Image (cartoon, rainbow, N blue to C red; front, side, top):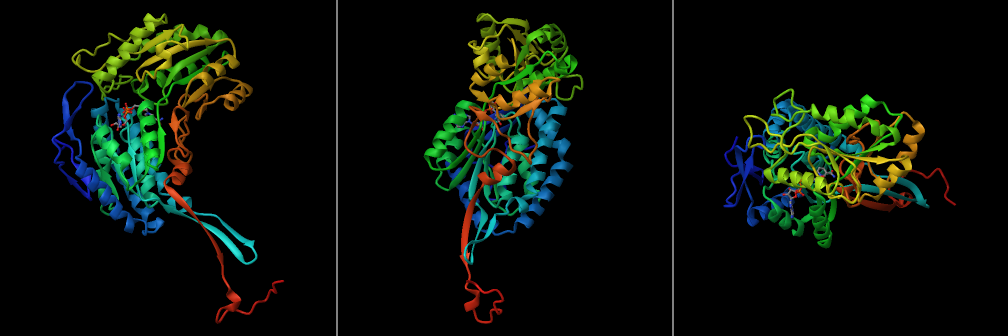
Length: 497
Ligand code: NAD
């Protein structure tokens, strides 16, 4: 491991000349893992210039050849799967099973990018007028950029650059400064797969580097994943500078528990979906809506949640790891305190949890609130910690009204034995990703990641066909050939009237 992470610039891993560095800290111990440089203005400009130069030849590489390189990349990612997951665990604190899932969900997107030739097929209509045909070509945009959050340092970069590059674009990635080691390793494997120099650049840093990319005249498209306030800033600035922008942002995801649901399934899935990965998932369930008599299951839920213990990434008995930073922990503790002060009932309080021998870690234990109302700060703010809120509703319409009034619309789910209730819910709920007896309904990469409302700003969503649309232009050609005038043209057997 480098003592200071390099940039991936102009096809080489190079030391930044920047004097501004950020420490990358193991969240379980506060030990220093490495340092990450904040790229200089000149280095950001060089990254974009190198990507622009590489675009001229990369866009001419046949899509089948681009796909073969991606197959090689997918293969390398699989061979290094556990090694990547271990790096990821070190810098995020995620338990190994979650870290492996993070890497694997990214590999699945690369596999989907290997299908690029068929995804780049246009449309054809013959004889749109007499002897005139119209057809469309799907062509790349140019230099695209991706700005990623801390919580999925393998999966989310892999949502972006493989597909953008498969489409024939070149890419500048700015990963989260909190866990940049995994994306850096992804870039090393990318280089090893044999892609030409300059197709991918990795620029490290924070808001300063992001703001330079947002306004850079040679960047055509910006893909962002992160918190809602930053997403709003990125969307406004990027579109003001006339760029194509997609922002996948924050969330408050509800699970509706109908009284006819299977109680054990509900409890087991609610526990995993709420406190798994320390609740630091944009699709985590943070609110459980108990409909009618299902509210009686709260005691059993509390008992099961209380058995989940945070721990080290390689402790097989640990349910989840620490929060990413002391600041993230302080935020979650502030919100828990505010929940109590505003009158919610704290049935289980993880505020004081500490792991013996690793007291400096950013630990928070499983926390459960009941009697939560939509005006409370714990309900209005995204907590992004292992905290589950329980809300009660009289019937499914009440539950729907609560969800539809929430400004976010990333994910939701319903647990029920009734097909009719499930269908009513899927039709009326104003949320972009819906699970039916599935707690975290993240679509696989042949679909797209379709958050709604304040969870998404833009038109085309991440990965799948929508991302191919996002990373490409459509060129429509209308053509007429005067065959019968041409020298050596075959005799016309059909007489035109
Ligand atoms: P964040 O918004 O703090 O940071 C995301 C990225 O933006 C980082 O690369 C960071 O360096 C950069 N950044 C931070 N502040 C900036 C600023 N003021 N100007 C420009 N750039 C800035 O997010 P995070 O804490 O790393 O990630 C957690 C958030 O991401 C949560 O809100 C979560 O819901 C969201 N998220 C959403 C999805 C989704 O698909 N909807 C997926 C994962 C995470």
